[in-house]
Amino acid sequence: MKLQNFLPTGHFWDNALSILNARKRLGYFPNPRNPRSFNEHILAQKWAFKGDLSLASRVTDKAEVKNWLTEIGMEHLIVPTLGVFENTWEIDAFHFAGELIAKSTHGSGKAVIRTAQNGRAFSMEDMEVFRTWFTEDYYKRSREPNYKGLRKRIIVEPVLRDETGGLPKDYKFFCADGEPFVIQVDHGRHTRHTRQLYDANWQLLPYSTIYERDPAPMPRPALLDEALATARQLSKGFGLVRVDFYFIPSGLKLGEMTFFPENGAGRFSPAEGDLQMGQQFVKASQTGDMHIGSFEQRA
Image (cartoon, rainbow, N blue to C red; front, side):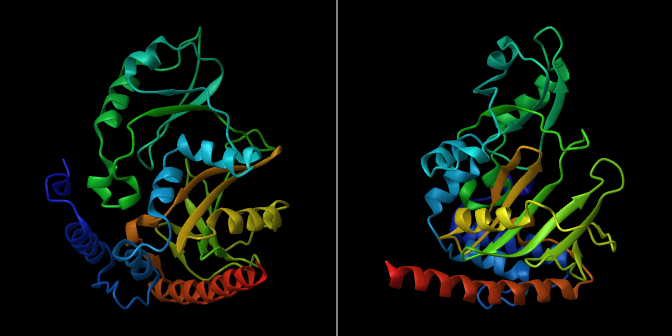
């Protein structure tokens, strides 16, 4: 059990523990009060969140975000839902069909992919995993305030496929005040995991985070312009958010919205990338602020 699960919560403790975690992982003491690196800017969002935190919590919930998309007229982005469950008994009693993926609505980074047979999809071992998900408080573990108080549920969705029949890549759009400035693409998640970061003009950047950088540029995706426009719309009003999409033959689908990528402790390779992405964030923030100001003047 993680020590932070037993330590006090609240603004001071949440920020202190986040800074100590980043210091351990990054090798330098971050200063969220005067941020320069990208990780520092992420931690600064914990110190003083820019945007509607209650809305951030709502769109963090993997079930509630779909209701929000419907309300704002973006239903086409929704991945279909097979079921949302409050406990393992409900899952066990449900009749499933086809390929499906289970995720907690209140957590991050965990999923179980299975194929249903005779209406059943999940083993007893899977049920044990789900029981741990139902007991997890991701807010206490990560100290990310948007996870605080989320209902503990499991959502099951059909597995999406790309044009090759494989699992689709997810394209992650880092946005500052409604302006996308970096796009993350992961390759070989289940084999040799590599990562690429592009700017909004689809120029490959000279650094990566967490995983080794793939030096071979990808062709510009056909859905890129639509994804950039959609990311602008979804991220408007938030100082920093990452909007994740799946690109599939039928179009864009929203994966999730992440407000504290890598919890402000993502290692860069080379290390200078942390500062470079921080500079890109500041530049995009200024552009986003100008767009918001122009819109308000027109209104």
